[in-house]
Length: 409
Image (cartoon, rainbow, N blue to C red; front, side):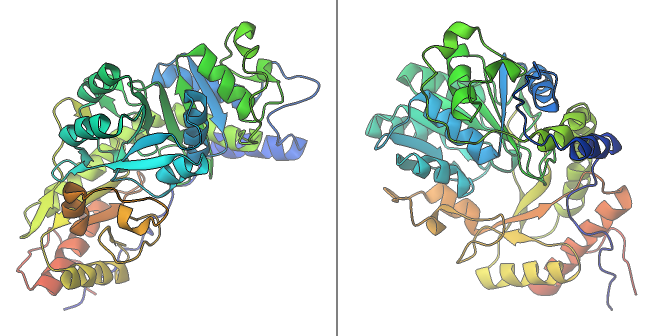
């Protein structure tokens, strides 16, 4: 018997109408740059977005930049990271995160992963801080999995470590009611096409430190047009920041115009994403050799994808990925020999010196599978995705996996 493939491609969702109207207005005017020599005094889309996003995250300042990696680079630079400094970094992340550290010619030291929760291993974090005496830590909320942020905040504060949160996959996630991105000195966000806010390519840095915000505004490439930003520190903070390097990482007015209407849609989108994630998880969690990722108490995630472990051989796991992908549900495997698409693991990053073994990360990624989930999926489509995953595993692993709903041709 053969089964119908998924009809809806698992791609980025369409933009809301207001984003399109905003973009058309900018294109008709030709004002794609966020700054104007005549001065726009914070009335453009970029400053509006900064104000609105700072309100959403509950931080004093937000600076719109060109990408999530640009946001991370500028935050690290403002925090004081220089050539040869050691920066700790979550081992379970994507290559662009240590890439931002490498751009500063700093030294990346990886922190191991709890293989049950896909979050940072707290014991290894403590030991690595003591071993290296590092003063900076980039914590990635990779694929939206949220660690014990209160404990990490305490560890960093007690050790004099500046924490920067990489919230690219966690816009709107909370830990005991507090937003991700507010536990570190900085929170950095991505508005890339597959994120909770889709601006194609764009990023945001948030902080409550006025001197750090001033440095980021200047180094992002504002040409001292800081009064055209949406959340602006007192002018006195720009006196010491005036001679910061210009890295030309500012956001475009066009990207901001597309992103702005989506901030008010975040709560509804994230609610729907949780429903989609939980419906699929409910329908695949009883498959033999499948294990779901554990969530810590107090965490409210914003999952734009779903991950699960498949306790099978590498050959079988690859066969499952191939079988499912042929039917319209691409499954990515973190354990592949070479990186592919938006999936990689630390052994692929030859620019990072592996200082010690990372058994938790190795255990997790060797069996970790990943499926992207647009928030526009219907419940029927979620059931179809579940069926395709079940049937692909049944076919390749020779299990009797009864589907929730069979789609015969």
